[in-house]
Length: 282
Length: 167
Image (cartoon, rainbow over the protein chains, first blue to last red):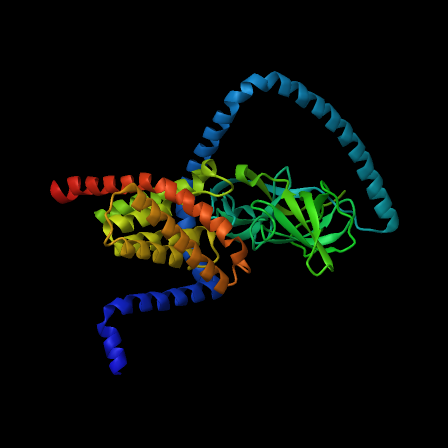
């Protein structure tokens, strides 16, 4: 009793102790009861997202304008190069359509369900980014009212961006694949070796990914494309994640790991697509 | 009125940080404007004001980008409080002192952030990259701190002139 009376008299200690107790309680409650966190999150995100969207648009416009100025000098050359690229890609597209038809015929002959690589996509804009340096989370301007749900995959034309962490009616938080907490089932496209792509963890340098649980005899070379394997059911199969930068044996030699350079430039992320589902194959 | 002004400035900095920080990536890291603002507020107005700004800033970050309330809220509150408490007997206003305090405050923020994130299971093995994230971000914050410090002093003068002295 005397101790407690002294403790309460000495307010210098009381404030840090109270702060500690309150902090631990708040962490505990919001961590274990998602609805408590959501009830705080939803009104704030809904109220501030229009301002964030406006500011974000302004930022992108400024950056695009600044990037456009030096490009004026290269426009003619770039135009020529793009025309050649379009011609080449059209040829590829013709071949792909042929292969797709052939693949569908063969699958139906073998009695396999036809797979579709066409997705039901929802376009969204990045309106905010995690200001810290430890986690990689972005906010997009589409949410539950647009049919977006937790764990849906988020992509760009370059490849996989991440997956939905949580949603409100008009916004969603997306955990990027570079986040240390992220984990995606993946495979090496050439060798079909399976593994798990983790975020930026040791020894991957900042902005790179680490692919773990690769077989010790997997023949990996620099530049091998890494795609999602579809295992786990969250991320559809076949989405490009990045390419192998280097491969090394784990210290106990039973497994290999690879450092992956993501195909998406996360620093310039502006528009993304959320995969809401697969379109039915014809 | 003073509190309202500080909250408005913090809100503006938070919005700038979360939407326009794409422009200020340096070596894959970015300076934390609201944190530096909280640290400078702690230097100018004392540990309680700094801790309050740190708490509000951390709370906003946890709500907007986290999965629970705590990691940023606790770390930023403690960092700002420590900086305010540690700067009691220092000669304020000297650039070098502001910079050293901003470095120390950011270091403390990262330290407490990692502890909370580790205890809650958000970070599994954070210590391997603790220094590679903490040192560059502390340096970045250190270099922008004189600018933000001047801003805080101007806010103080503005409040003194328009609200405390004039009326």
